[in-house]
Image: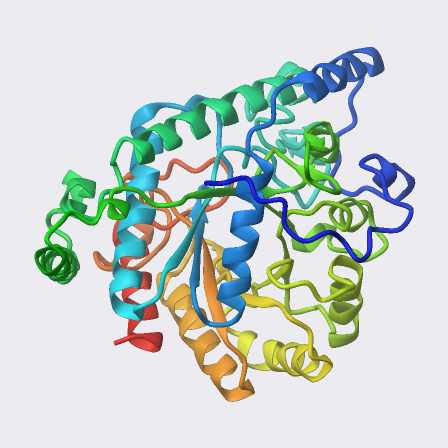
Length: 456
């Protein structure tokens, strides 16, 4: 991809620097006990190479601008929280396979290009509802993701360690390098989508429907090549982007860089950083940080957000209404979406703001089972996504994407779906250390729903 300089800025962020967030209240940040070790890790991180490039960032921004206009559809998915130990080839390739297979269904059904964004190569930090976790009368810092501490319930493991930022950079680089190698080597070749299959799902009730779509794509490719008399070479690879929640601000600052022949600052830890619902205060440190980078950015929007709060947030993060800049990811829950979402859609529409609306049907539907598992019911996930399309249609707005927590592994973490998983099934393969994820079958079922609601 060519390095395009792009248009010169009309406005630069006022009174902003990568460290200006330090002057604001920063929620969900760890307390490092050794200031010297923290300073040394920050200095080392600032010298390390970036993980993505500015031209990749700008390419994604252009594609998201097209998604805002209904010319593309965003598929964003991956683990709730990556772990360092999961940085291995099988897990990474399976994660990529699921997203590629979902995108095949979407491309074929929607007749639209799909923007593929993975929640990986950096999703190592997670917000928590409490700073401390107590077990049997012992209180320790909560596990905040491998970028900060370790999940084992010991003082040594739970103490925040700044060297983990260096390890996180290394694991992200290895993941990104492997994903790029797979794609550049033809892993995503549309001539052979059958190569993406996962052996353990051969029995899936959705397998035949997926195979029909794979066959149809293969037939279409062969037909076009017959007409043209030559191979369509650009079908042997796809563009793939990374995303993560920009939670640990010291890590994000350390990878915020200026680059030659480009104006402004880029967060080069990821293509697409987002702000979670807990840190979306317009006066807070996370909004202050992200308002100054040129990346496309996203914000999670929950049912408690008022139209006035949302417009202030849009003004802070995209004051000049730039295309492709801002994505709003609503996460309402099945029970609240039909009442909580319409006022927000109407307000943003009335104000004429240019945003990409995306549905996260996962996070508003979390519950605990009688046997102590944190889970989500597939019927509620499916119901919220179904309702999201209807609410947008009624408001005259467009749902332009979906944001999912999923995995390519044979997990049993969300109830229901194609094999009707029950509470007892959760015990078989509940592997997540934080939030429950969709398995392959459940992910594909959602892709089929999107096609039915928006496509043919």
